Image (cartoon, rainbow, N blue to C red; front, top):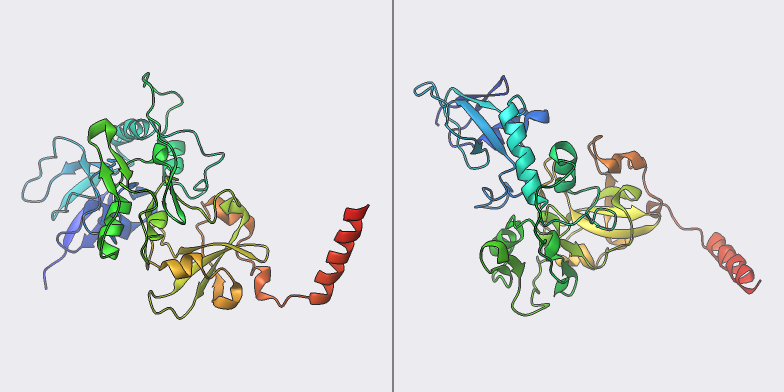
Length: 333
C-alpha cells in the first residue's frame, strides 16, 4: 500500500492518496476552498480540463522541487505531489483569472435565468454571481441556435451550452451506442445529432442531470414550476435496470419530476434509467425515505423542504368531491 502524500491548500494540510488531483484533495477538505468545476465529473472517466473554472496557483511544487509552477493550472487535471502548496481563494491572481473565465463562458450564454428550468440549480448562475462582471468586453454578435428535440423527452437548447462535454461522456460510458456528439470545430462547435430525436436508450435522461446549465432539459418538466417552489424527497423502488434510488420533486400532491440523487458537489450518486425518470411519477410507485438534505446555501432550502409533502397522506375522497361540486357551481355563475 502506497504512502499518502501531504498537500496544503489555502493553508490547510490534508493527506491524500498518490495520484489524487488538486480538486479532489480540496474536496476532501471541503468548504469554500473547493475550486468550482463546470466540466469535471468524478463519475465520468476522462472529464475535466474544458472549462478552466478550477484554475489554482501552485506556489510550491513539492518538497523535492519547491519551485512554484509558472502558470495557473487546472486543479481537476493536476495531480498532487508530496509537500505541494496550493492557493485558491487566497490568491488574487486566481480570483482575477476566474473572473475572466466566467466572462468567456458568458460570451454566448444568454440571460435566460428568468425562463430557464435550470435556475436555482445552475452552477454557472452561482459562478456569475460570485465572479461575474457587470459588463462584457465582447462586441461581436453572439452565436444562436434553434432548440431541437434530441429525444422524445429531451430538448437541447444549444445557445446555452458551454461545451463541457459531460453529456457526451455519460452517453459514451453508460450506453452501448452514442447518437450525439460534437459537430463542427472551433467557434462552430455544437452538441447535436445528425438525425433529430435520434437518442433513444434506457439511460439517455442522465444527460439532463449532468448538464451544469440549462442546455439539456426535461420536456416533461419544462416551464411547470420553479425548483425552489418544489419539495425534494428521497425515494426508491425495485428496478431491474438501475438501482432505483432517486429524488422526487413534489408540488402539492404532484410529482413534477424525478432526478438522480446528487451529492454536495452536484454530481449524481447513481445514474437512473428512463423508466424511473419519466414513467413513474406517482407516489404509489415509490417507497418514501424522507426529505432530501439540501445545502442551506441553496435557494431550494428556503421552501421548508424538510416538511413531508402531502402525497404521503391518504387522500380525502369526500373533500375532493365537495370541491368539485363547488367548482362546478362557481363556474356556472
